[in-house]
Length: 353
Image (cartoon, rainbow, N blue to C red; front, top):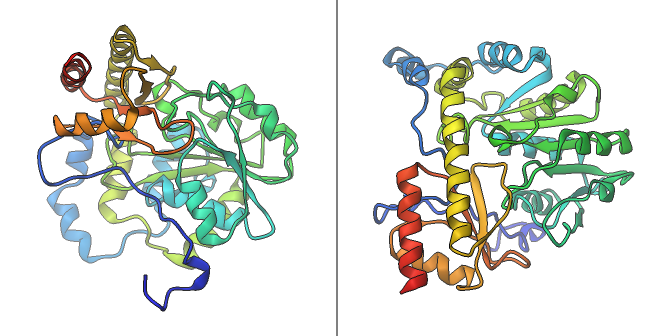
């Protein structure tokens, strides 16, 4: 680091995203991207005519996308704010609802960016441990008097709480915002969007990266009470009014409209997940009951870090976290059936070799 860096940031450890290697062709099962192409409707929407319009700024109000999203989720446009990926929505939420006197409460095993953002913005972290089986006890979050963020389904475990459990947390914290990060909800979780009109302290964040095949477009939605969304827009318009580019706005609206393709690819991933889970268990792996587009698995036959490295050498990328309690596990993104069979074949070579 340079001598000019603020001393307050000198101890900051940045988030490490999943590998995007360019050195060889890998089967990428490490960053929870969709193995399927974007909807044909998306391809049609991002036309040459739209590319020519890149000389113009995008619509800061995101009018067309908001209209489509409101119809899709049964909300009003003023209850939704698009972000440059769900990460931006989450960051804006922490900026809006936390500060040095208002901590953020979150689980010890969850999305790593929460802690990084707390460090960046000098927000105190209140870290609550998951239970021994990696499940979250909602009662741990009752009456905290703090802003709360819960990834549901959680990452990297894939475990999910029912909507009723989140509702209990909302009821027990009426004076604090509860942020529900639903990046993976479309693969078997229960969304809390239906609770938005009942609880003015609920903020739901979703992404287009996983179930709508738009990870490279960077698009997410924050949904909640209109006053909460106005708070987020106060932050957005203080930083970057044009946070969503023109092509992504078109792609996002088209992806929402094509519900047939969404359901088809979502169902395919769920089916492949369950088949892969059974195949891993047959090989002696302990596999958590995922409601996401990935599996968290471990085996006593091989250390997690070593297994990750050996798979990479064989051209298969998965995700390994060198962190307490989960260092022996691997997070495995669900690819196509053919990709998952290659994974299983490589695991057999490693474990039986």
